[in-house]
Amino acid sequence: MNQGKSKVNPLIGVVIGSDSDLPVMASGLELLEEWGAPFEVKILSAHRTPKEAADFAQTAAKRGIKVIIAAAGMAAHLPGVLAAYTHLPVIGVPIASGQLKGIDALYSIVQMPPGIPVASVGINAGRNAAILAIEILGLTDPTWQDKLEMYRKKQAEAVLDKNARLEECGFRAYLDGGQL
Ligand code: RP5
Image (cartoon, rainbow, N blue to C red):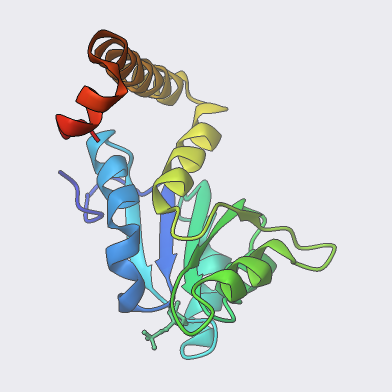
């Protein structure tokens, strides 16, 4: 378990706008740990710590980071601001915080004006962001492609198992048996 504190140089930089975003991102971070992907996690805010956020993005490539995941809620300018300071790909994760429950963050991230793109996954989709980051690493290192293949294989097997159970017992028994 590297818990984002591995001595190995991180390849993935995960930035959250607030510690209140951490619980949502936990499942993605756990996946990175499970797959042995070196990563670091930082709390940096585009508006509360603008200088530190800029420094992070400006130095990320030099430190060996290949892809950045940036999670933020509400106005969610963090992914766009980081992207402005680096040529690395930035994957934004809109977090469902505040009165608009992530719709605001989704629009902020996905509607970047032309010139500084940010990729966006779904609201609270930290796990998908982790998978997408691994896919980006897989472009230059087949180790990550193998891990992705294994993951997809296990995922497909789980669905096919469920289908076999459903076909065998019918939908009522499936529901009554608490299979969901
Ligand atoms: C954003 O504002 C953070 O990413 C968080 O989702 C939201 C609320 O932050 P806190 O007030 O919980 O620190 O900057």
